Image (cartoon, rainbow, N blue to C red):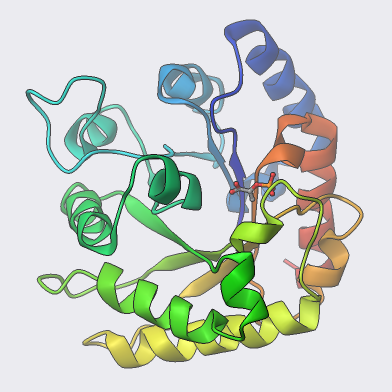
Length: 247
Ligand code: PEP
């Protein structure tokens, strides 16, 4: 799966041009594994544009409940509007909005209750990476985020080293592959029915480095921020994925 994270970007006009361009660059079968998460205010626009296709339109965040929570939306509202997946625990949410494992776990429960696929984002800081603490950090993020009250049937994880996000720096693809194997093992042991998650890589993916990542067996796709704002580049990434994964 290749997922675009548009963050706080986009407007009605630009989005429309993006969608037209993207649609013209890909054949229909490529849409089967594309997800786009625009801002909440543009969700409906994108969902309407792609409604006759298999492109999944998701959200970047929800709150655990609705009602008197100014500025937020609930998973129930997202679901009623046709949301199929949602990012959870992105490092920008953890850092700017102080989100911790306890809240993230509640968000995952709330999404599952409303039939929305969560994409759990995890990743280590540069200091943790340098100190050799990446695996410990990822393991604790996974354990604290998996809801205790739910038996998961599937899970998508996005491994995003914080130091690689928006920086143009990336870890070696082989190193990412070995971390993805580790993540799959941890999730398998931590879940009641031993599920093996799909693991996406995120952090400065573009159409030049994408083939290095997709050549690796345990890299099941990508979460793409900056490069997804350009429809041509994002379509190139999807085409590279399709060619290398032979799907
Ligand atoms: C992200 O923030 O999820 C991300 C992957 O960003 P970028 O591709 O810009 O590094």
